[in-house]
Image (cartoon, rainbow, N blue to C red; front, side, top):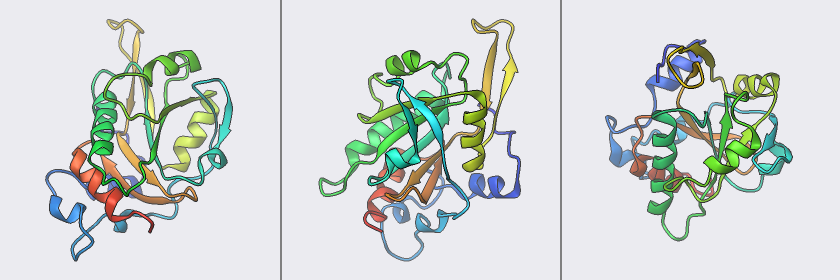
Amino acid sequence: MKKSLLTSALAVTLLVSACGPNNNSSSAGSSGGGSTCASRAYENIGGPISLVDHTGAPVTQEDYKGKETLVYFGFTNCPDVCPFTLSVVGAAMDLLPADVEKPRTLLISVDPEQDTPEALAQYVESNGFPDELIGLTGTPEAIKAAADEFKTSYKRIDAPDSTMGYTMDHLSILYLMDKDWKLKTFFTSEAAPKDVAGCITELADN
């Protein structure tokens, strides 16, 4: 996917400071000096959401407090980066130590026209995705409000030769929220499963 939708200097900071395979991967899973996992806990990223889950139930951020949550903005017809990122999360969950609780994962659709609760319900069952993957959708206004809270962006791109006639260009950032719905860290699409698992382990109970 394109990454040309950065709308603020903060978003640029998010992109360039991500924990990925080109960084020192040993620091991602340790609590020693040089670790950058905790340094990505921006207070102004993440906030209220008011959406509908893949069962059709209305939800807000209050429904997801009490357990750590990974949040990802994408869409079910995304050809590559979305399924890849969700597969990375699924693999990362398998790498977590037995004494570290696995976060749930939320996929917030940026394509409400196609991503009905029924479409999301089928998508979240895909093999390789995290076991506790929950799909969220809503009105275009509600999704835009949620994206703004997470300082992320997306837009519709015409694609006349595609089945839908368009695609969605969006940032690929995975946010780790704590039990109080506050950002603990984030990852870009370059993060490997060991990076994601390492940061979740390092920041456990912090």
